[in-house]
Amino acid sequence: MSQLYKCRSKPIVSIVDESTATSTTVNETLAPSGTRACLRSFSGFSACTKHENSSISSAATSTLVSVEFQDGSAVTVFKFYLPVFPPSDIVDLGGNGGFGSGLHIPGPGILFDDGLIVKMVVPPNPLTGDNGGQICGLVDVVYSV
Amino acid sequence: MSLGYCKTFVKEIDVTSADTRTELDATLPDRFKFLGLTFFPSRDDPAAGLGTVNQCKIFNGPTSSDPVMTFLMLTGSINVLASNQGNYVMFDDTYLEFDQGLYVEVTNAEFSDAGSPFVLTLMYT
Image (cartoon, rainbow over all chains, first blue to last red; front, side, top):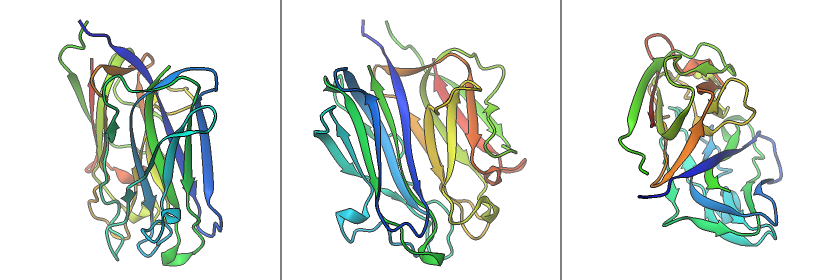
C-alpha cells in the first residue's frame, strides 16, 4: 500500500518586452516563512521570439534566465538556468522544442520546513527589430503543503 | 491505495478565441486526479504574433484565477508546423486534483483551425 500525495501547482511566468534595459526579478511565495512545503517536480523554459535576439545567450550567466528555490529566509536551496525555447532559424520557423516534464525530485521530495519561495530573474532585453521581440522565463512548479 | 491504470482522454479542438476558456469536453468528469497532459498545436501562423510570447494555459474550472499549468508557444514568419508541443507528467505518487473540469485557454487563436486542430491527451484517473 502506498500513500498518494495531492499536490498543488503554480506556473510562474515573466514576459519581458523589448527595449527593457534592466533585468526583471519575480519572487513568488508558495509557502510563507514559518510554514512547510515539499517540492516534488518542476519543468521550465526560457524563450526569445526573434531570431537575432541574443538577450538570452551563453555570453554570461547574467544573460540566462535563472531560477532559485529559496527558503523563507531567502537562502538558496536549489538553483538552475532554464533551457531556451528559441525560434528555429533565420526565417523564424517558430518554437523549437525544449523539454516538458523536467526534473523529478528523488524520493519524497525536498522539504522546505520554513517557507518556499521561487525567484526567477530574466535578463535585460534592450534591443528592437530582429534583435528584439519579447523574451520570457516560465516554470511550472509542483509541490505539496 | 494505488492510482491504478492511467486513463486517457484525447481531444482535437479548434480554439477560435484568444484569452477565452474552453472546456476540454463536457463528457469528461469535473472531478479527477490529473496525472499528465500533452498538447500539440498543429498550426503555426505568423498572424499569431511574431515577436510575442504566446501561452497555452490549463485551468481547473471556468473561473479559477490561476492556471494549473502553462506552456509556451512561439510562431514563425512563415506558416509551417513548428515544434510547439508541451507536456507535463506527474511523478510517482503525486497527482493534482481537478474538481471543476479541465479548461484550456490560449493567448492567440492562430495556433489552430478546423483542419489543424489543437491535439490534447489528458492522462488521469
